[in-house]
Length: 212
Image 1 (tube, rainbow, N blue to C red):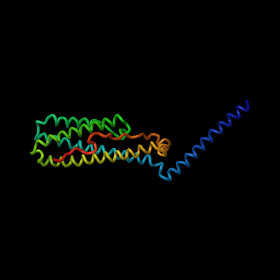
Image 2: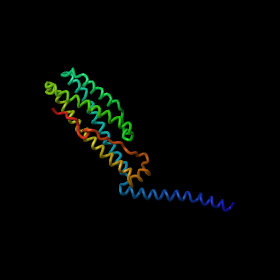
Image 3: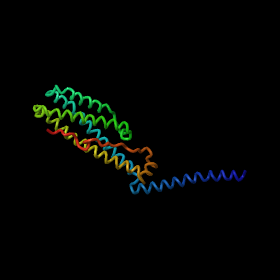
Image 4: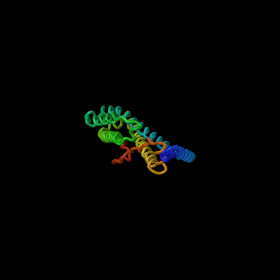
């Protein structure tokens, strides 16, 4: 009985010592990692990816803001192209209805929904711009020319924003999946999750042609 009691007491004493040793080890490790900047790399890359995601959203919103004026301008010269105009308007409404935030980048289903809606809008815009070819008066309209220039610039910005986001996510995902970043993330940033990125689609590497 006395031996068992001593054994229990010894085990009780060992447990706090083990916890203290682990805490000291973690402190030493954290100090070493902090000194070389490694401990901050995971949140730094995460913030860069989130910032890039915000820029993607900003540029897509910029495009959405241009569409109503574009549709109205085209309608003034090509009312008979009703189906094409409705297609653009509906695609814009669908893209705008997909609500996204910082958490979307870690949600495969939500991210895919957003990407698909934007791709559909790109396709509808492409069909509208092809239709414009049949209306010389519209192509020379000053308001249309201004909108065309803005749309061209926005499409280029979208392409750049997507490229930057893809690069930022690749760096972040690689960091939290490889050593020592994987260890650091599990110890200090357990809430960190891999982020989704844009999948390749046909002609996705270049914006729609908006020049005539």
